[in-house]
Image (cartoon, rainbow, N blue to C red; front, top):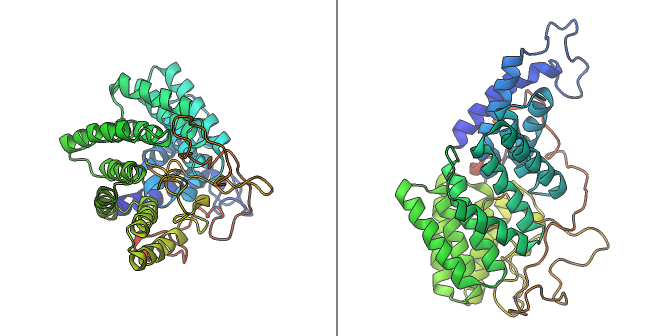
Length: 378
């Protein structure tokens, strides 16, 4: 996956970069000046957008969300025409924008993608955009709406042309919403159905998230042996597909489980490994507290971690706002007063990008960058 993604990113640079000049954004030359680098042809620009959208999995799962946003934003700006490629680019960009800090922008882009796909009569891209909208609802703490959204998506079933991975992730996020609301038994049922779908098609990436969701559900039930077994299986699959963010999230969950079974030394080792992986993605862990004491049940620390892909990334609270994991916060679920999923993304803060996070020039190469997010870095 990673090799194909890097190869695709290099090709993307060639197809999109000429439209802004040889020096890229911020350079002294641009457009069609005397440099000899004229604006790219319309077919090249559209090919760049098509490639940027097709690489959604690489940007999303392999630790390259910032790079993905950079290329998708440029490709979308260069292709304002209403096309299927633009619809996919919009929901892909919305998925990435909705992850670390900008849920409002992410939801707006996903809704624009759905509206465009519906106008074009493209049911598959509309369904893909629906997934992103539901994820953002889930991690904006709109749990009833998220539950209803994914119940409808799962009941609808797969539409022609819909990406099979996103069909499975609809079920994963449904289980996630159920778990947040304290309905762990139903979450396990949904996960078992999703596992059967993965087994039918030999799918491994979504399976890793289903297993992680099972680990979370059993954590809520305080069934530690089952939680640990599923977390280990999820981690093995995430290593196989180089799901960098998923590895970090699963290591944090495994550390929490280890701490509850008294394996404190192993928990410390797992947290150390998670620290190293998070360093390549976000040292702040998107505001998570991997081994925070449980509030009533064992799920307070990991529950707000995405059960699905890193499409759902909680953020740090804004300065001056109450902590999203405050033990004094009231319960959202009267049926389970001690189980409250903390609102991760409804309070966000804008922070200046570090040098490693700033947009890269079109000539950037993963091999040349000292801050490359290669899974092998850790």
